[in-house]
Image (cartoon, rainbow, N blue to C red; front, side, top):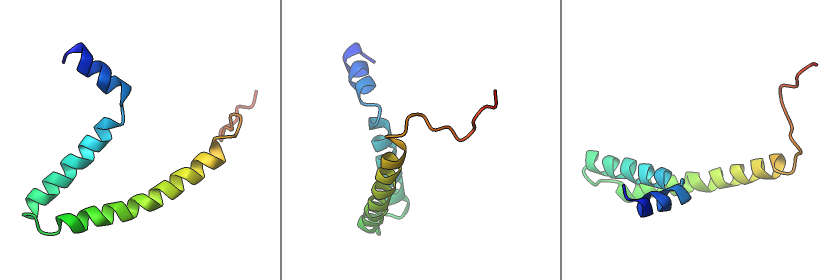
Length: 75
């Protein structure tokens, strides 16, 4: 890989998740021979809305905390 592409990919680590999701969707579409491709995408987007709500809630609860630890050492 050239330095420019490597630098671009290093600046965007999330791109691998998108690539893997696209690959899984394409493999699914290939296996089912194209039937239900849009339905699969619609269900994934419906689940994504709930994941965003849960992720935002976790961020709001854990983000402002100054280092909460579940396992406190007894020293």
